[in-house]
Image (cartoon, rainbow, N blue to C red; front, side):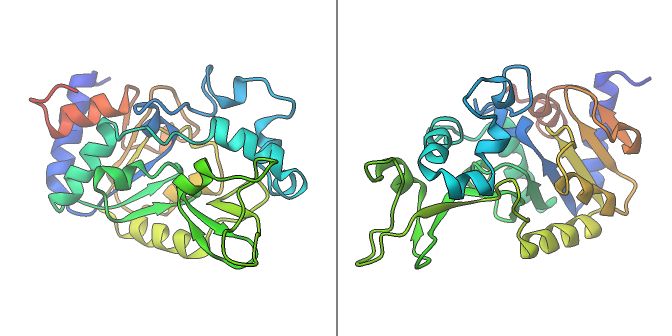
Length: 254
């Protein structure tokens, strides 16, 4: 069995040989920026609330109890001071070098774009996009953080509107955006290398997208085993940012 150094060298070689790399990532990318992983031991799903997070973050709950939804959402889902971590920066570098063609992410924090990445398919939406459910007016994250009615609900400031503003994030019971899915599928099908990192590959339909990869350089990097380890051409159980830094910038220490 290859040791970590050998696997990193293999990853470095494959990156050098490739020109249409696609990265598929999950919460483990953003834990490097201090954003908790939902399903880790210390993550969101292991904390205690009056209702489980998967209930609070559902479309039904949002419609029924928007005030309670927004209390949770502002407290646990928004990290406006978070900065891009090592993985975000490495991927932006690979894109700038013409090696990486797209990022497909399950994260909603916008940190890939903050790092400089241009072609990012956000499967679950973004906290940086928010829309009035009545008139469709657009609002950024700062408005959600700074504006609310007496119940804590952000409302549209357009004259005579006052509609509830909804984050453009995919809640439980909601479907993924079709155009985003189609773009992600196209990028994965056309990839000559697919790097999957920082995800347990447990959330569907997003996790099912990697089945559309047709090449022979499927790299899976995650600290713990996943449900699809057997499908990987190169499997690395280690920290994502550490591995990518060693492969792409071996002389740099993160």
